[in-house]
Image (cartoon, rainbow, N blue to C red; front, side, top):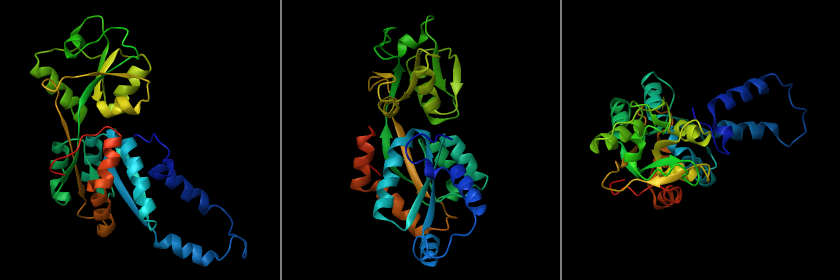
Length: 269
């Protein structure tokens, strides 16, 4: 699970530890901090919405959740960030979720019987992550086959890995990766740490690295666009709030946030 970003309070494990800690504290002294019964009632009234989202959505969905909460103070959003494969598997195994946002259509299809009608809300493009300054002069996909390079890819089971293999296969390029990672963020980290010279990631992840890696563009005719669908879970306990979150992601305001983080608009979102 990827928990990077300022919204650590939305991590499920963090919340569980907090609840355990609070359970061991003595009762508050009457009169301190105002009307405790009113405060407790307000907390009970707040809806806790759990959003399962692809790791590549970490930064953008953190911002979206912040803005959604600001407009809906009665809702608290918890983000479960992992690969789309992991999210889909957890949902299939019964993990409590209200909304699922995937980085590809196949993983959404894997839980088709558990979600309402999915809608595409964004697209993304592939890029090659390299060391800042590109000292090894990696100019494009063909260079990734060079013997002097250590290349890391996403595992073929996760969206970025599948997209990368499609792009490489279409150009007849054979790459021998030094590792196959479970999330796109892990691919970026390998390049950041110098454990790999290059990796195929999303353009948005290059931007999110804030200069820790540099991106080499992949031409449109060699690129494989990523498609991101979102859906409400049929078994959600909060259908109104879950749909409101999805509607916000699809709204002009939500799309503006996504585009700010480098996502491409969805014509059919």
